Image 1 (tube, rainbow, N blue to C red):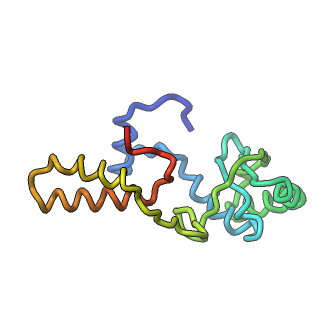
Image 2 (cartoon, rainbow, N blue to C red; image 1 turned 30 degrees about the vertical axis):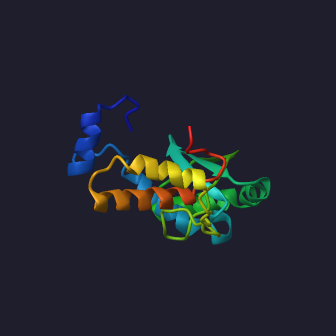
Length: 163
């Protein structure tokens, strides 16, 4: 894989047309092999950062997960290479880091508790009304006011809207 900086035009062209692949085609295969090789109990605590020159770089959420992975590292590396049909992963490097909790098969973070709306203060409501008063169309004014109030009620109270 080239280590040179690519022009933005080339990146956009690759994304739109699929020509001149900028991403190593082996990476999706490594990800699939990773999913098959690593036990599900460990996957949630490990984030695959990437692979470069035969080294697979991983972030682990806590020392316990890192220790468990260390015991299985050689067998996991063997399973990944066996799945790929060639020795792609030569070494695996772990480092401590934050790992976002993800739903299986989804790309967005899971949140155990949805945010709870709070009541707006009188000052906040008056400020929103003052801002919206300059909008001439009553329908647009009402929608903007409602959107501002809804947005504001999910923000922490310490961030002041009032100057």
